[in-house]
Length: 324
Image (cartoon, rainbow, N blue to C red; front, side, top):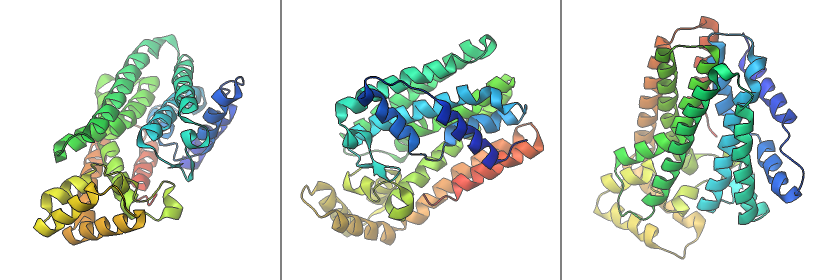
């Protein structure tokens, strides 16, 4: 059984060995750049952790596991363009460092490379893995489009928001775990359990991301703190603040939402103050705990090597308690 540091080392070594291409340099350099920025490597880690519940020969699946990391970074590259985000993992985003055209083409190439990595799978699971991956990738795109649609809607409900983040973020975590289980030879019941565990954890993970976007330490977070506030993004925090605010608080929220010319720090400070008055941080934390609790309950029901199961449990606990 490998520990979390062991598995992280496997992922790092695997990424270092990847070769995406050389010419033209401005197509491939952005890929190497975003892959070198690090991050949590959460998704390939979940693939390996799920696989390890049944099997120990981790090395044989590192390459296909990296397909989910390449795909994830492809989505980030394109999402950053849509969000006009200046930072990713504390560094300039690809479209800022190069330009939008380069970021689009490099992202497209990453999607192709993800499929190349999946082709290293044995034929016994290749067809099923591709089918599940395609469904997941489509749902991620659906979630991103729904998120974009929210910008044009006057209101969004709590349930609509949760479904959007389930698609945009959580399904890829669910697929990552199911993918590891599939390669390990688990049955349909176990694969569904792994997927459900991942989806619930993924919703909690994204809600935590929303909370950190407003309240994290900028030196740890790696993205622009308050970015969601600046862009009037309809997060769980804003949706519930508008729902729960009294007349005066709602007027202040709408004032800042409708204001085009503002000092960023002033807007973030003002809306954070309203969130604090209403109790939004505590409300959001309760929702985060709800989904993580559901995920841990499902994990307890999954059969597998107990030591490996504890490693997976510990990793999920780290995600729940993260500050960046």
